[in-house]
Amino acid sequence: RYVAALLTAGLLPGGTVRFDDPAALGAFQLLFELWETPLLERYRDVHIGALARADNRGILLDTLRVLLEEGGSQRQAAEKLAIHRNTLGYRLRQIRQVLPVDLDAPNVRLTLHLALIAHTLIERG
Image 1: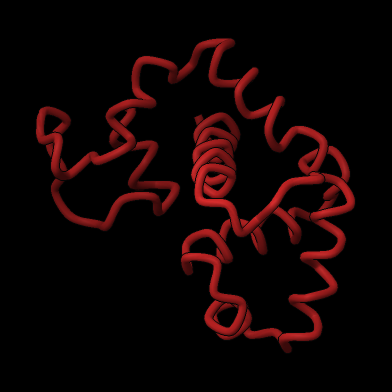
Image 2 (image 1 turned 90 degrees about the vertical axis):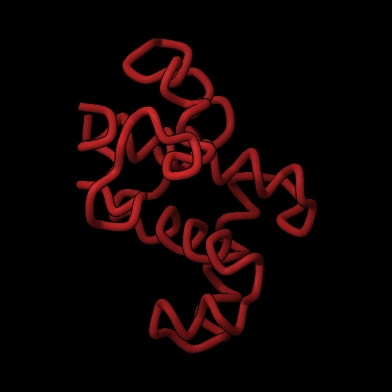
């Protein structure tokens, strides 16, 4: 069920994925132990809960997710989102107002990315 949830959410590339293949699951293998537990929800809530509550349509969460997937590159994120860079800048200012974090810090980006993955697993689980 866990791998199916990851595939359905588009977090893993399509095709056949074996649960016992650490290379295929990557970081998702670490989250398995927390899946469907209050700990995963607490992790999500601590790190992006305020943003999730403030973002009724999910646009800011999606923007943050794409920015993180693109390694912090605003140009690539704007292209992937099909928005103007000024629009991306506006959304990032909104995100920073809710989450006062340094989006350029690798540890922060990893933390937020894991929280976004947790959010996706919780919402689709």
